[in-house]
View 1: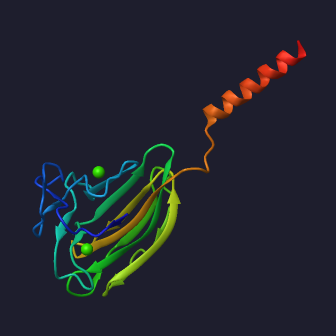
View 2: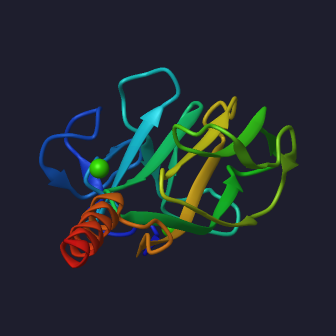
Length: 185
Ligand SMILES: [Ca+2]
Ligand SMILES: [Ca+2]
């Protein structure tokens, strides 16, 4: 899935709820944007109840982006699925801007998988991540003052094949045990 922020991706309420509407500069990103059958995407200002916002032009190298005065995007899979976060683009608004830190963290687990913190960006920056987590991800950008946006968030939702089903395994072991007992009697 590639989130480009094109089309009617905004909500009528500041928290990203309400009916889906076409975006105008400053509109809230709708909380349903990016959601899939086995993954939920959430948009928030850092420390606030409001969603991220949408702005069309003025970004260097791209258009139609999400931004916030510090923001967190969470991508959380349902059970038995995992998120493969491939990449995203960061772009400054009109000229060189700095951000305090950029973190991509495995959700709940909390161990940093990636961090470019403290950089200044002056052009469109493609940020490859290439991390997979069954707990999902937080993409957190702090201290942008609204001057850095995010675009082209590229992720996949894939079955979490690596994790065995404990319940199924337990039942199989139980059945095997019963068979052994039966043979011995
Ligand atoms: Ca959502
Ligand atoms: Ca875009």
